[in-house]
Amino acid sequence: MYNPIQDGIDKSVRAVQYSEAQPHSSLAGLVHCFWELKTVTDLPEDFNYHALPDACVNILLNQVETNIAGVTALRTKAKVLNLGKSFHYVGIQFYPGVWQGKKEEIADRYVGTTYLGHLPLIQTSEKIAEMDFNTKLPALSDLVQWFIKEKLVTVNVVTQKILTHLDEIHTVTDMARLTELSPRQLQRTLNRMTGFSPHDLLKVLRIQQSFKKHYLELYADQSHYIHSFRKVTSYTPAKYTAKFDV
View 1 (cartoon, rainbow, N blue to C red):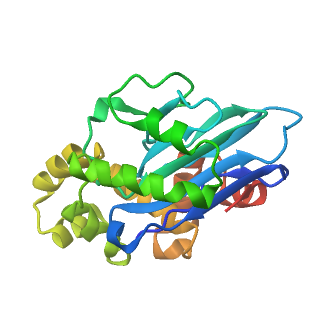
View 2: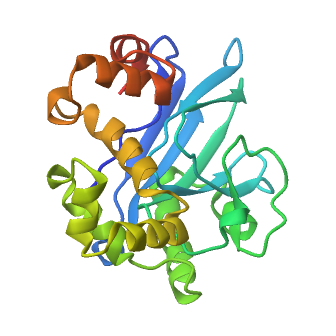
View 3: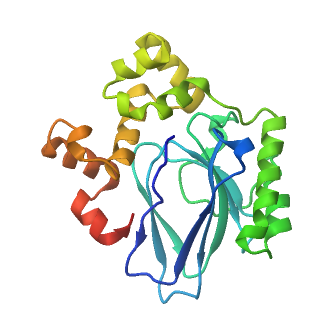
């Protein structure tokens, strides 16, 4: 199954801790992971978090200011998020296509304002704010179950086929064949379910795969790979892996 890498944390910053936990098997195919990002001590200067596109949707809860929360996802380019000198976030990362909530409620930028929507994000955040990460997990799982009950989260058969057969997909035509849809049907279906065109989804998935496979398995040549990588991340592959933990 699809396993996107964590976002970029500068190797020179030692006081930022990132943790992941896997969901219960009952949530397989829906939740990629539960995650936590926090400072261990206050930093001497603002921390810039290099968020990579992965086609996933995240529920984000600020554990310092629990009224701040949101639903987040990036499009096709990385973004640098200034998180300040001290922070503590936890979240739920859903696989691509799983989130069925309103697309206009998804933020593709830094979330720093009070959550005003109708999801029980603030209530959950307040409930778990003083717990350690492992103790938070049951409440995060309960939140996912609430999303399922409200039909805001469901297994997406189309994207699940794509994600479980990534090694077989080299073109949009391959994607259409695998999902048994015409190119036009695939375009409409993916746009409705994920907000991505087939071409943009493939672009993001290829970059994610490039961290774990030889680039020639994914791109025509080195020049094409470097150009595509830089367009998404703003770095060459060599400079990215030298600067960030991956």
